[in-house]
Image 1 (cartoon, rainbow, N blue to C red):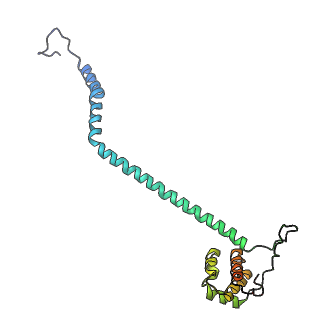
Image 2: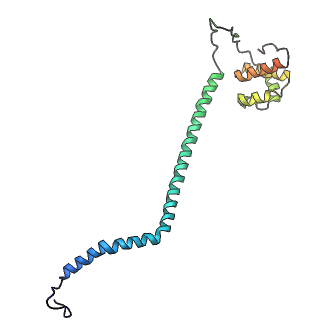
Image 3: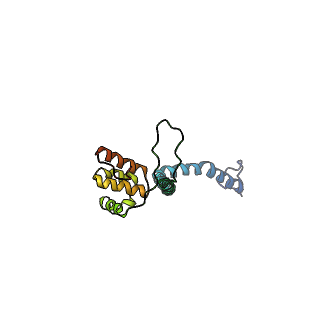
Length: 183
């Protein structure tokens, strides 16, 4: 098939060659040009979409990370609490045989006195639920009788050294004679 407008001396491309040439132009010229134009037109939308997707991923990672941090904190708190609970209920240790400074002997745990428990509860409501640091902060507001009661109550129950030592310091500073079993 020949083109009537084409000069007779030029060879006419076969229809299959024309299709192949057209596909090659599409692939090498028109497609890259179309991609460049599309990206240039859609760039702000692509940036927004990328920012949203990345923000969502970061937010999800933060939530998961915070969950694991909270779980770890709870586990550490439980383990430390159990260690402190075990430390607050120590078995009597044998006195050291040699020491530079003589250590005070560890007295046996005195029997609980209900009167002390009542006085301590009146002075420091919820005493048995308070941590040692919470009790120590409140000891300075107590009078000598209350301090003696706290000391005896603590010695007969949980035997927390920080509370016992601070109560003894405050009693000494107030020049109050120590009550029986207060040291």
